[in-house]
Structure formats: C-alpha cells, structure tokens
Image 1 (cartoon, rainbow, N blue to C red):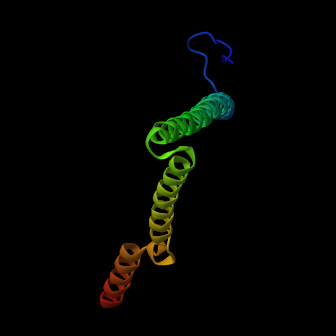
Image 2 (cartoon, rainbow, N blue to C red):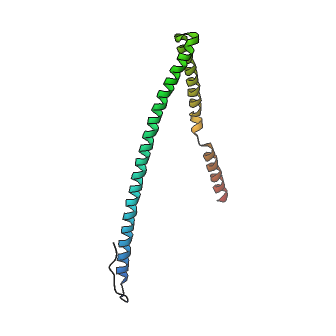
Length: 133
C-alpha cells in the first residue's frame, strides 16, 4: 500500500499526514501480525515433528531394551537354567526400578517445590521497603 505520489511543492495538510500515518501503521501492524502467525505456525509444526521423532525413538529404545534383557536371560540360562536366569534378571531390574522410583519420589517431595530463595529474597525486599518508609 503505497501512498499516492504528489508533485513536488504540493503542501499536504496535517489531516492528510495523520491519515497516511495511521494507514501505514495499520498496514505495518497487520503485516507484522501475519509474519508472527506464520512464524508461530512454523515453530509449532517443527515442535510437533520433533516430539513425534522423540516418541518414535523412545519406543524403539524400549523395544531394544527388552531385546537386550532377553539376551541377558538367555546368556544366564547357560549357567543357571532358564527359570533362574529370568528370576535373577527380573529381581535385578525390579531393584533398579525401585531405587529409581524412590529417588524420584524424594526429588518430587512437596518440600522441594517451595521456592525458598524467592521467598527469602521477597522478605528481604519487604524489610528494605519498610525501612525506607
């Protein structure tokens, strides 16, 4: 949207100048908002593709882990028999899983969710503000 060309030396009124300014600003805001929407849509598509790839990779890694665990059972079966090998691997995995869950629960405890540094800094700010009054 280009403003109409006027011959040199033609005076323009303030109303014309303000009208052109408003029109140009409106056009600028519209084009910037279209650009922002396009960038957000592109980022969303990229994020979705990345999330899908991560999910597919995680599924394949889980299948690979199951195959490796089965290979460990087969390997141990040569020394202790298939039932004992499956039991040993199962107990070991259960113990590791239990340790990971216990550690995760500890990290997720309610006490760890309290923003202690923020509360401390806010109380310092309040004290400082009261001293200034």
